[in-house]
Image 1 (cartoon, rainbow, N blue to C red):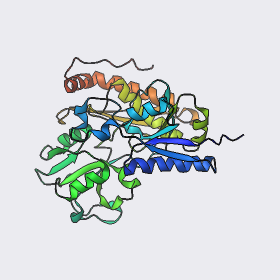
Image 2: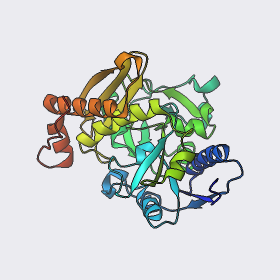
Image 3: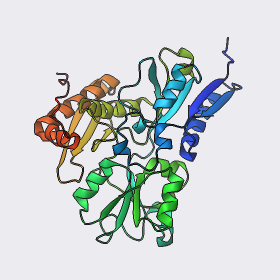
Image 4: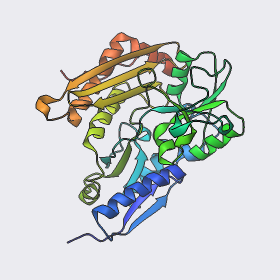
Length: 339
């Protein structure tokens, strides 16, 4: 017998968050035609505090904590998040039940509207490399700030907060000469024509989980997991498991300049990682490969093991000292990597 109870989705209220929630709503309706779906908007700490840089708020789960509380209280059945906003340790009683197929994981450079861009976002004007010295570049991310400092130490990095609409409005009104955003959100909202340049992961790594959506529900909720079965993408799940294990082993968060990106092909999974000082004066990069065993693919556990191995090796390379200086504390040692 089909469970006809309404499904309640908890979401932030931004245009992008609601796009994400509606994508999950559509997946639920396709999995169970005729089911009623309700979207409830919840304001999070990250939504309320807009005049302080994210790294200085000093709290994990800035965009998830209040939503998690609603799930645990039974006020919602599931939540939809950008996976990059979900802490590597999900609160007890909750679990990630699905990870979406990944949108473009790269960061992008956005220029003021009057400068124009070419067809399908291929910029005909400035790029990150050709921005003039002293250009004002906006970002809310320490990871982006660090990579900017490494590649373009001659530009001025300014803090940028607010939803995507607000950030673009600030750019167009002249507060910045360029801003850096995640491609996924820009593409999902149909603003591809604003993209001047896609930043190549060979030189510029995105945030852990960037481009993927996570559906979080109460642990053991078989109904929600079943409704999300077709929405879940195992390839993205394996890649993001590697990235999140790398971040967790380094005990990172939004206050720490860490980047990672995993990709899969017929040969296996490749994970690239980055650890940097906040100004980009110290940057470490390395990678880890996991072979697809007998053509059966790479499992979540395989990906997570790769993330822990890469973290341990980068600590040996000096990442622990860099992160200790960022945190202003003694070096931390990650959990031993799986053999």
